[in-house]
Length: 248
Image (cartoon, rainbow, N blue to C red; front, side):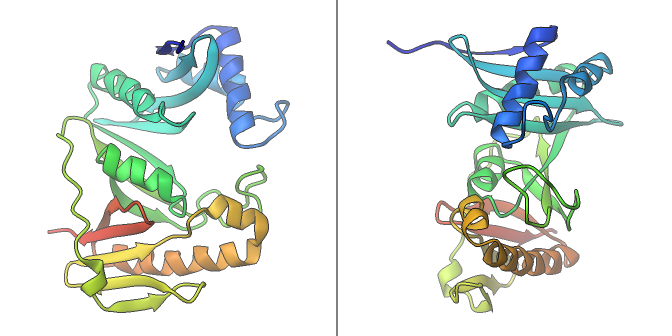
């Protein structure tokens, strides 16, 4: 028998505290020092933001936080969920943002985490529009510690239909950079750049922090150079390759 999955907004003290605990568990911090404390979440709700929680039966299985920005923007501050629940959480945020009159939503994520890139760029249809070098400075949680906190900003057009992902033919394009593992890091051909990320950067960071940092710097060079030329990130393949395309 399968349990019922539900998504709902959270306002009560117990529900918000459970969300704060969930974020602690995801980022491997003590529950006494969550990355998003309950009092901060309450303040964001009071200021017009929204906390959505995903429940698998009665079990909290994911949560997401969003706030209104200036003009037609909203910002998704954080989201984390069991596999398979991410689309429902983002849809709940999308519905909330549209009711509030927003047209776009923005958030950041670690560009080395390929599965998140694929979810954001391919499954949702967001576009990587800004590369932020060491955005948060040193981070002390159990997932990011020991690395530099580069982030990719994505912009999600809430009213646009999902576009088909066209990865192009990277294999026929010249290799322009080599990765720390000796393989190809980047291909470039005309208006497209392809950039590879490690298969599992979280595991790599735990096993070999120095190598993970070399990957960070290598990918950073590709992205900052491409973004300076007007490229955006439009897709991620299942085997870990970004597609970046020149904007018109």
